[in-house]
Image 1 (tube, one colour):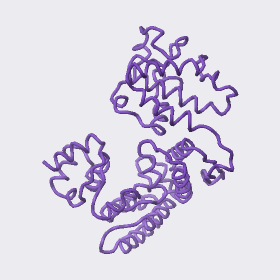
Image 2 (cartoon, helix red, strand yellow; image 1 turned 180 degrees about the vertical axis):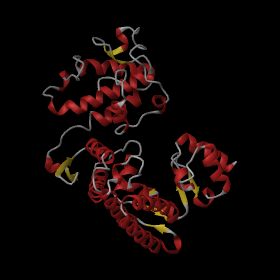
Image 3 (spheres, one colour; image 1 turned 90 degrees about the vertical axis):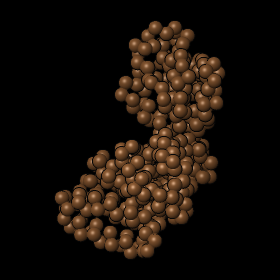
Image 4 (cartoon, one colour; image 1 turned 30 degrees about the vertical axis):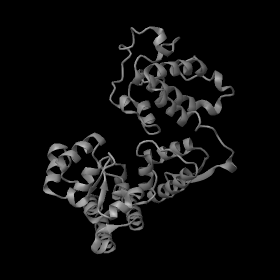
Amino acid sequence: MIDHVHDSNGAGLLRLSTVVEFPPFVKSASIPSPEDVADLDSSAFADQRNRLFPLHTAADTWLSAAYILKQFGDNVKVASDQSDLTIDGSNTPISVMLPAVEKAAAFWGITKEASAIADQFLNLYAVPPQDQAFPIEFKLNDRVDDISYVGTPGDVVKLGSYIIENRRELPFEKRSEAARQLLVAGEHLRTNYPGTLKQDLQKTAGMGMSDLDHILPILEDRRRQYAVKLQPLEREIDNIIELVKQAAGASGLLDGDVLSKTAGYVDAMDRLIELHKQPAVAPVESFFQATLDDGLLFRDGMVKLSNGVHVPKAKLASCHAIMLLTDAFGASPKDSPVQAAAALSPAHADAFVRELTA
């Protein structure tokens, strides 16, 4: 992975985004190319010898810290002397690079943000004795049984990110059980989850709510897919749709138990025709419209947007809201208004709320 400047395909950046929250000044910054930093003085790099990990802006300092600490965490378990630990592609010890990063972070006024990375990586990669850790069992590809011992918040984040990244490979029942176990461990270990990882794990664990307006279009789309691939599955999905309608009753609401069973059935059918391998087909976690944290508000007719604002579902169903979502924010006509509003970025959610309440 080396540094963000030489991360040509962005794979390292993607992995980082799953385990650490990027501050706004980093999200809005451009990644420099090797040519962009070619004229910098060697003192502008954490690794001066190899001219790696630039520190010439606040965003580059933060990214250099994140790339160094991520690779430190990946290698720390095999290091006999952590002060002399180096990173693949750099022969400069961590003990030399980190002080340079700390000095640059202080200069740019981002010591707090850089320290947050250190809190997540340096303190979270320690390997505790197994008798002090939580065993999380999962089965990969129906072939190999594996148990990971989770003893730190960093372990929770790392394994949680793995489960979410590989959820198309793990049958829903297996990944659901692993996610439930992991959330229990995360609660005991007081884990601070980056981004939407906790919400994603809650949905995978079957902790959430939804309603017929949200789930029926998804099931109808599955029926069309099944009709093309394997007709007997079309009849099965019809039965599931009827059961879901009965379970929802007059309220139209569906709880986690019903959704989990439905997700398990549909995931199993997806796998029969390898539909789960198609990126365009949403995983069954999409059945869960609201996670456990927001479930009661959702039940009471409120939807939480990505900016933290709660909006009445009835208001989202108005013509004004639907026109805003489709015309101004490019929502797909296939999505329900609630689904489209929940998918807005925080910035778009702010603008949407302003327009909706104007």
